Image (cartoon, rainbow, N blue to C red; front, side, top):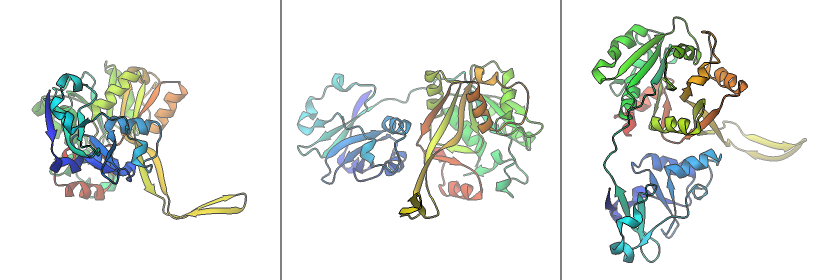
Length: 358
């Protein structure tokens, strides 16, 4: 751990106006590697900070993305005046939860930021297997999927499934289970059971379509305590291990990843009571948490499946709830893409880089 200073000319990356919405803060936070913003007023005085933890706390409390950014921020921020800078001692700031300390002038304007940097931690190798659902037909990607399965469609020169596997490897996953169906042999041939990546891959094949959750019955033969599961067409900057750790901490039977999406309703919304007109909102914004296609399940949640049948994930959720299993939801705000059609491919290709480095 060492002390570094982010100088005035590089501060804009970390600053955001208190007049912005939380959705603006999310966009900016996604574009900074340090994952922290400092909120300033019109006179550029510091009034708070916004971190990854602040965002998740707000999302868990169902605060709206269209709220002002100050509703999410931490206003009890620790900072130093410039005259204190030379007297700062490492012992006073060595807090595992705080890595950034603004240095401000007498008007509370940030002039630089003290940053506690540390060497990259070596990833823990996880016993939990990483399961990829890769059996779909990908019909909406035709003609791209006429001769290859959807997981092998390339983005920036690399198949979707390989983007997912490489990210999982970087986070310490070494055991993979891949559920295949359509053109299964082509996926197996391409991945060659992981030998070139020094990972272990087990393939489970659906001889007939089992839906988005029917394959879970096939996991019963494995002896693992938990299974991390992702749809084979989902790319995200979110760290998989955060979901796994949350699941373990909450001792959940199943944990679902959700993202808050703000959509523009394409019609005018009429408000009325009885038959009296109250108001009209032209194309209002609608917020909904949606399923991200990322899950962690434990062995207990497999026991309710008695035979191999067609089953969609929504039905599986309801079945678990009916059996009083413990289901938790973890909120995601990082960049996330569900590759549905050719427009999604074009969008990601235009980025001209690895999606996870954007």
